[in-house]
Image (cartoon, rainbow, N blue to C red; front, side, top):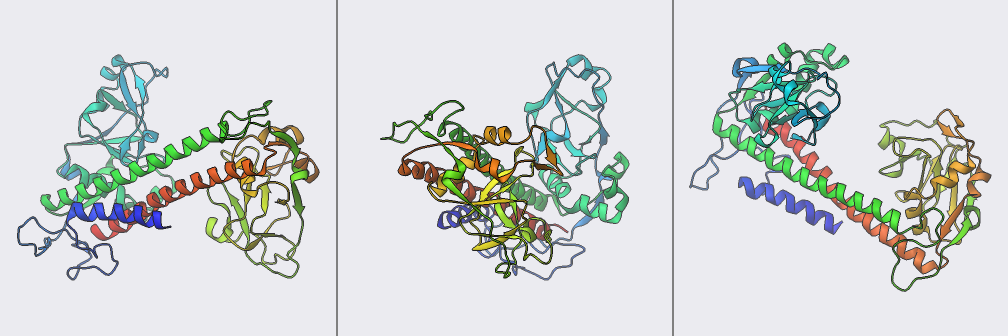
Length: 452
């Protein structure tokens, strides 16, 4: 937690320093003057001066229709050639993330210069998604050219706004407000070019636009950099999960901790753990749990924003802290279900469809890491009826589940070292993910306070 606070404080300090903001800028109560919600935001920047008196912008904001302040709003077409061969970048909605354009497909120069010439992109064009996921947005940099796009992205060119300000404004509440006033758009998420042109942009004078745009550009950069760090750490973890456990048919992992050379041994899960079937008869717990890939065993009310379990949970299994649960339902990235340990709460309740167990002769932390890998998939698939699923649940009995053969170190200390290594790595990932989440939360709050 100390590391987390240090990381987040560092990022907030960078933002404050960049903008020369007072220390209480991020406090909810901060408001340098009374606000007219229709014409000015609650948080304003100081104007450039040498008096150090923080003279804030006080000009009212103007509501401007996008089409009246741009030279062109158009869109592209789907290319006929689907080969992806060529030297021209072709940008689609899925290539836009966090106001940036990521790796793209290719089309030929011939297509680019013929029937797709209407949507040939220029430097500083803004791409704005108008089909499927509304409101994804990014600016075209010169390094991306030559480039083209399809009909799911509108092209906004020759705009009378600071580019970073316009991107921030369009990715904020503008689209949400338009959908609120036009509910049919929200039901079938598509915007016509005419509707894009009708979007209302509230904007201040150019100098304040530049300050706001630069600020959110920096904030987006901080989010992107830290998200890349999280992604890299997750990728490294995936690599270690492959190398610190033996591959199929082998009895030693590719990487070992110093001092360990013995072959790992095969043991049935039922020899290492004990099944738990205690019922919540006395309503010892009223906390309904579910398994999340990211958060493990977590309160249903937090994960689903409602309780999926019955009101009467006395017939449910009672799981206690440190015990494991197997969810036999498959999900994206978890084709054979997920196995997680209860760490967040002292206890909770689970449907009797879950298989619950506790370690008796194996390191608990080792099991956490082992079941975080895919090394147990083969055994589950072998014990389950091929292709047999019942209402989305893998058809595997508890007896078959506990007959799964695991390859583990015969040395408890080595088990612990493997487990502690991944626990440390998970904590580092969590700290950095929390930092990203807090920056996104800060951005959302500031978008509300710094725009009309």
